[in-house]
Each structure stands twice: as structure tokens, then as C-alpha cells.
Length: 172
Image (cartoon, rainbow, N blue to C red):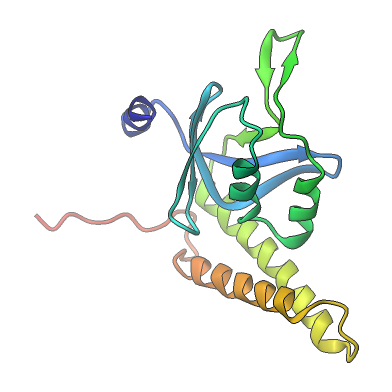
């Protein structure tokens, strides 16, 4: 892990977006970045301030739980149907993982868009619940969606309209 962080600090590794492959397509997790190589690395939760040491052969429930914490409810259902077991790509002679690490030219802007999309879905579900006198969803799920929406709003408040977050200035 130390070598990965040192490589990142030296500019040899760039941050990547994190997602997974499912029958519905490529699903990206909002609020997670990776500092990783194809052989593994760190998944960093910006929303929770936690780290996950990842490698391509990781198919544990802990990995699914870590990723699911950053997904909308619909995306969580899609993740449940995915087998995270790594496969061998015989043509490329390498191990491939259903976990995606995507390069981004504007990672902060992309994360903001992902949070906005997740927030929109949560607010849409909340308005459906509020519009129906007969509730199909439990109050716990509705509360979870509302909490996720407020967390997303809080996270978005840190990002100004500029493409990148502000850089701290040195006082000395």
C-alpha cells in the first residue's frame, strides 16, 4: 500500500473512477476514487472517508458492501446480480475484474455528475412515495433515500461551478 501511495504522490498513478460491469451496462459508483494499478490498489470513499485495499481477484462481500454504499437503490440491485469473480482474458493473457477503473480527464467534474444523477434518482423515489397515499415502500427505505439525497447535496456544496475543487494556498 505504501508504494501505491508514494507512486500516486509522485504523479505516477492518477485517480480513477470506480464502477462495475453488469447486464445493464457500466455502472459508476459516486463518491469513490481509486488509486490503483491493474494489479490492485486503494479504493477511497470520499463520502465516508474510508479506504478499501482492492485486488482484481477480490470477490468478497466486503467489496460489494463498500461499492454498494455509494450506489442508488436501483444500482445496488444491479450489483447484487453481479459476480465479482475475476476472469482470465485468454486473448490478452491477463486477469480481468468486473470492477472497473476508468481514467478521467476531469475526475472532480465526473464525480459531481455521478452524485447529481444519484441525487436525482433518490429525489424521484421520494416524490413517488410522497405522491401515493398507499405506500409501496417502507418508511425506512424512504428515509434512507432522503438521507442519501441530503448527503449528496452536502457533498456537492463543496464543489464550486469550476471544473476542479479549490486548491489550498500556503500561508508561508
